[in-house]
Length: 131
Image (cartoon, rainbow, N blue to C red; front, top):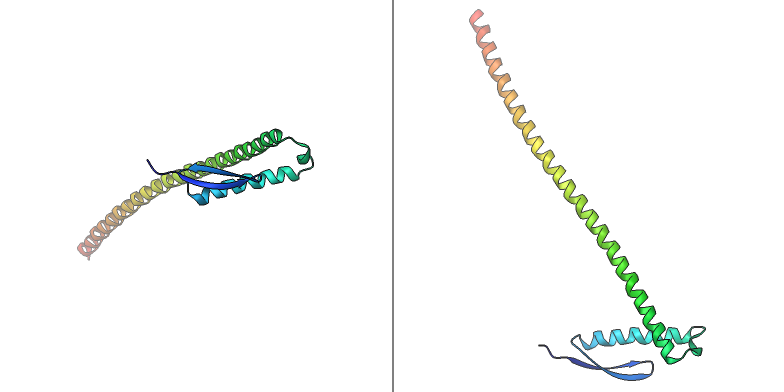
């Protein structure tokens, strides 16, 4: 089990001691984000009229809204990536099919050239026989 980091953070004018396995920098970053969102809410038109409880509920709702939107964006991005990966696989399959077809055509050309050379040789022999 790894050690927990205990970090003092400032949120809404209050100092809190937070413990977590994340780095102190990360915990400070998260706390600063929460503090900034809280300050935005306090500065809003109705922010000064709200109770602390209502402000905390709205803060939680705003952050949850951001989370859901980011998840939706992430899911959309994943679907785009998956779609592109499927297209890449289709193109690879097509490329492999065309490579195999090209190899078959090259073999057929070589066979036909060999036949032409054989017929040419036979024709040269016939011409020589009649001269």
